[in-house]
Amino acid sequence: MTDETLKNLESALQPIFPGEEAVYLTRLLEYFKTCDTAYYEAIDLPGDIKDDCILMAFEERLLIPQATRPGGAWQDRMLTLAPGTLYIMPRVVKKLVAGAADTGTFDSAAAIRAVLAEKNDEAWVSRLIDFFYRLKPHAVAYKIEAGLMDTLNRSAHAPLDLHDTVDLFVLVGMMSPCTRGPITTGLAWYEINPALYWDNKDKDI
Image (cartoon, rainbow, N blue to C red; front, side, top):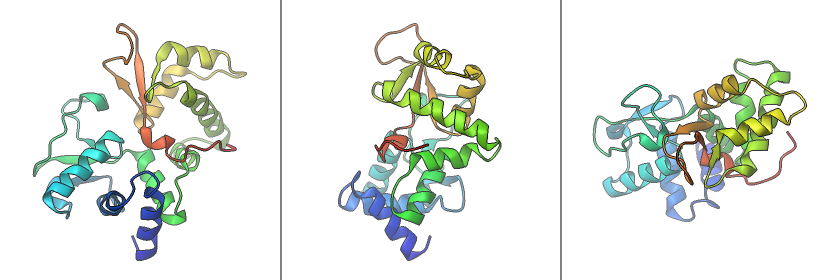
């Protein structure tokens, strides 16, 4: 990133992480400008600050520790703060961060559109985005139950294949399956990436 793009990203982060938190988080995210992964020891921040930043980034699902087993839910991944630990930036987060570095603002709709458009045509992408934005208001603590997703999908004018749609959302980092529901057990829950709420604006998508 150039000096200008770093300033833009820091400016976008300031309303969410005031003060030095935004400064250090900008430096942390900079390591992912040309790649999707980084090892703990490659992140050049002071020890305590680095650990705090990585923890904060994990809580916001900006960085996810490498899975210890295939398909592991975000909430089940063990966060280790030690050399040799590999952190992964979800694809949609990378688009979100890149957009903020260019414009100085977070635009979740643009990030979602960019990552979904990599392998889907525009008409299909628009349907996927419309469905995702119908889900967001119904999430509780960023979590939404699969049965509710199915109800919202079936009420649409042109329902999607819910299984394939959710698989795609998980693949690009928009959501993750939960092994523990927030309210009750025995139901399938999904966690929506908290970073996709940062702009907190109604967008014309």
